[in-house]
Amino acid sequence: MHPALHPGSPPPADDEDVEVVLRAVPELAFFPELQPCVPTDEVAGPWPPRRETFAGRDFEALRAGALRGLGALADRAERERSGGMAFLVRTLTYFLVGPAALPAVEHPLLVALLLRSAARAHEGADTALEIARAMDRWG
Image (cartoon, rainbow, N blue to C red):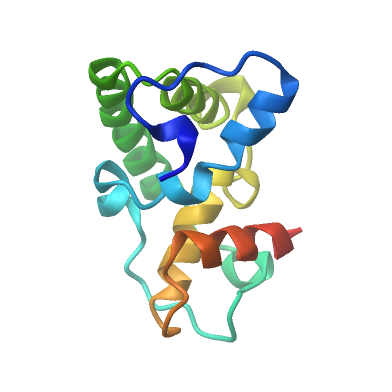
């Protein structure tokens, strides 16, 4: 498990720590609180998919589910006193709704969840490491 997601982890202290915590998004996408958010529709094509694979889709259900999952993760972060997880949840929530909301294909958590959906059709791809690699190439 990523160190920022452990119980008792401290919040990031500087910009370098923030970068380290943000690298935990692919692992966060595998937490049970976010499992119901992984889209179940078929994603055809090679691994890893490109953002164009998801063009024209409606992402409101994905956003709503991710928001519920992040709420549950906020509760977990508080129970576990995980400063890293709490920071990550706040940051991802901030860019999920309201005036700062990013398009779904640019929001790190939504991208990770979309990639998990596509990974199901490719043996060995539905892992945090493979999702992280795919996110690095997402562009």
